Length: 248
Image (cartoon, rainbow, N blue to C red):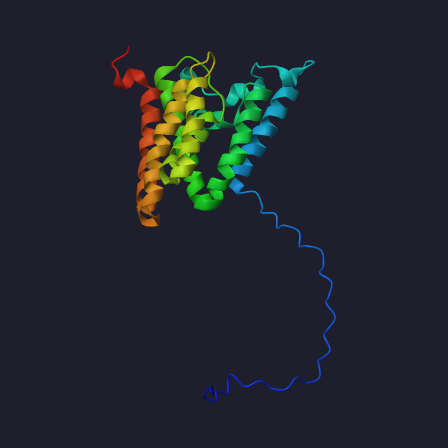
């Protein structure tokens, strides 16, 4: 049986083999590129650690780093309702950089590193600043509403605001892990000495910021300033109950 001639099926006679080029040895793998720390989270972590060390140094005394009492620095930046009412409004933000002890500091900064840095890299530092401000103000507002006469320190309220925003924009799989973490924080919030109000306020103000992030840049550019004004207004109302509740 004969087959039609097809130039693709023709076989050329084998010619002389071409010399193979020697294989070049592979060099060492390139080292992984280290991403710089996002500036907002870096400022929170660096500022919190620096103020903690400075407060312990100025407090003096052996074992001051392990003490849970507030030193001279933290006494000037901790949230305390009567002093905020007297006009020291910086405390509603500065309290996020003060911590009551090394365990408190270590826990919050580890979460700021593991949760905050990926969030800031994904949404950008500008949006992270607004989210942090709104969350911190929301946490301080609730702390003033429910625990006016109790000093409060810590970045937990701000971090819970990050978690609230991430809960809205995260995927279903990551949302499950985040929900488990939020449940743990909710249990810890019931312990003595922990401000459940600050945690709740930060989370509740973080959720609408997450909704604004999910809406896109235009929606966020309009909604974020409005939420910032609302948070500041709630802080002012909570810090001056006699003007809005009829308290003499």
